[in-house]
Image (tube, rainbow, N blue to C red; front, side, top):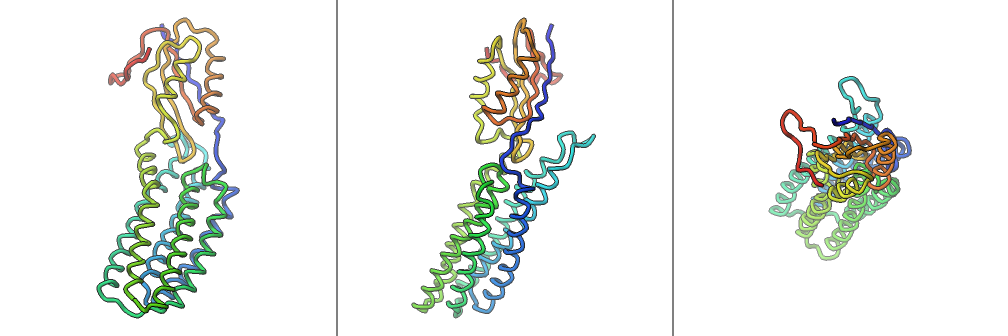
Length: 311
């Protein structure tokens, strides 16, 4: 006869929280970038620079990304409800997906505008371009610095960090482009540099897009090797088989696991589960686990969903 033991870990292990310590970082990042976007867009129109306009468009998408990430982080702090039994942690994944979609949509519009400028080149005020892009290096560099400590703990914070760091590097490129236009008079260099900027943004954002899509599909987090977790479970005392192992993200920070363990004649089930919960958290950063112990034959669900048992 199979014995069912369900253990729900509530010792959540996080990187630095997106709210709390990073609340001020989000505020400063949003305010500084909004002011800079307004100035950069005005300067781009005045200087007739597609490179500045493309950079301003991307910075505007960064403001929206920061706002969405911050809002999702605040929503994730809410307590679980009767219908939302896992709480609202999944909002961070939805925000990351939406941010990725908005980013590439903005890139499409900017690309269209850049092509038009390349077809119809016009004089560019290189001095204004260099001045505003130089200011962008300061604004984006400072904003990236605000998120430097949390960029390894949460994909939302890492996204903010990488966006700002990328923008700082792009601004360096715009300064160089403005200098080239100023000294050579080759106005076609401005839209050409804009193409380079768009390519840099698209390439640098691809890994984030891929990761957020994987999170949205409830794939096991990239940092966790499922085969290693299976081997770990099989190595536990008395365990002879593992099946129905599932690992998925509850949010951009929290990971859940469910598994059936075949443990014939297992004794001290509660002690076993408590130690297992502790080790899963510290070995794999899996903060929420539900484990079912079985004496012998695996219990199959109504739809025959058991995966192949590994003995």
